[in-house]
Length: 318
Image (cartoon, rainbow, N blue to C red; front, side, top):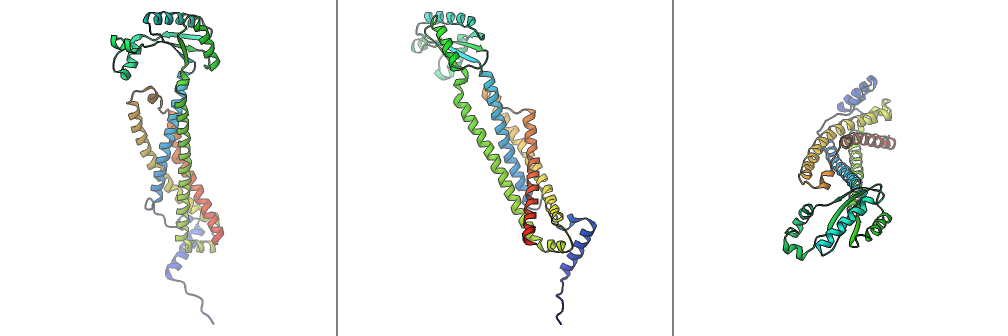
């Protein structure tokens, strides 16, 4: 008569502890927990850090586009280009009067010569009021105007026909048209940031999946014992998803703190540039709230991934 296989002391002890845990409803004690000792919290921290920075970049670029579009929408610039200072000044005054009488024009301003000089001096190296510079490069007279509604090609053509009668050297340009290539580039960068966020989310899910599978293989004997004692798949999955949620929350908190520090530092650097576009690329309270939700999303993603991975593996091995 064959003797039943002996059970090792370690396995017997694990069996007793597993039975006590299942009967007492303390399933979290079935698998040993080691907080922040493995790589998972640090992987989550890095992913949250990169995702928050990418999200901040996308939000800042969106704010930049919205504010620049609002500032330039309905704006036009009239250039009076003529080599003769007298004719240029006369046509500029006539164009100014014609624009004030044009329908749909809400504000008209002749840009002062000193302001034009300040704009050109960094590029020319000399002021346009210098006699040598005036002879070499006649600077056009500029008129800044605001119209109701958006400025399209039809409105620009109508204004050019109206001005041609009094200022034949006048040229009308929609201000928003100047930055259209910039807006296209910003839109491409926003799509790139969104793609980066999606890629980081997939990477996080893959890392959690691998960690869950490793933990399952490490505790397979214990899981089999729990299953033989009546432990359900959902009960076992809760063990791993709870552990994953705690690790993800710890890593997400660290990643968020680092991300806020990096974003704040970059924001100060861009604000110090003093450019109009750079200043418009700032974050509001709503943007910071969305960035704060990044670690929350990471915890949810990690928990759901761990649960799905464990349930699928249990159906296959048990």
